[in-house]
Amino acid sequence: MKKHLRIVLVLSTLATLAMASRAGAVPVRVKELTDVQGVRENALYGYGLVVGLSGTGDSETVFFTSQSIAGMLGRLGIRIDPKDVRVRNVAAVMVTSRLPTFSRPGTRIDVSVSSMGNARSLSGGVLLVTPLTGPDGQVYAIAQGPVQAGGFNIGSSGVQSQKNQPTSGTVPNGASVERSVSPNLEKGPIVLGLRRPDFTTALRIADAINQALGGDVAKAIDPATVEIKTPAAFQRQTR
Image 1: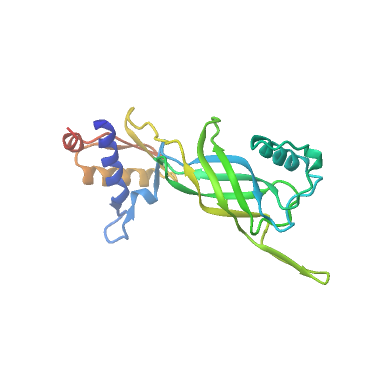
Image 2: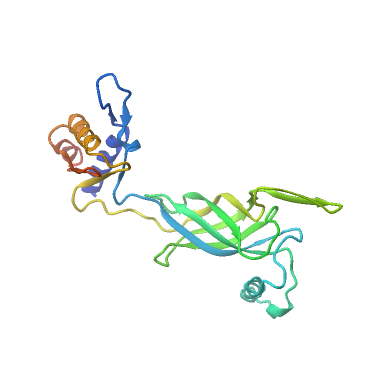
């Protein structure tokens, strides 16, 4: 726990540390030039249903939508043959999101919704409860809520007008994180990866970190990597 706290202190200092390449130059923060290896967002995805559409959902030819409706109703105790489903107010969608690093249960994140069938628009629909999984198959968030379509499609007297894509949209703060994700930074030193590898920049970042944290704690390994050891001052703060 103490070691983890020391790492957080170091990362907080690096996030606000300014580096100037030359005297009189505009300072640039280290976090704008580098990423901490092992600290990244994680992709989430899931399959769900958007209901409440005004006749703009999937047609009966999209059989997996009918199967999904029948399966959902079956879990609620209502038995129905998928072939008997004739509902144009429902659309099958793929739900995606990005899980920020260090997220904790209860955190709200945005989700994107995209039609998988032949729905004409998702405008006015509501996304039903959808588990969002990661590449490892574990459920990390649960999504639900009204969909804000990314466009519209209207027509009258044979004239059609469309703006952007009405078959995709977002649910702001539509998912609740259920499983926390904390990268393991306790093994070995903290490693910064330069977004644009350059040996001169790597050396200057290492020099700026050494000046700010004190001692010879940072060194440039190659044009894309700066390695940082936990300074003694931070170790004393968490004892």
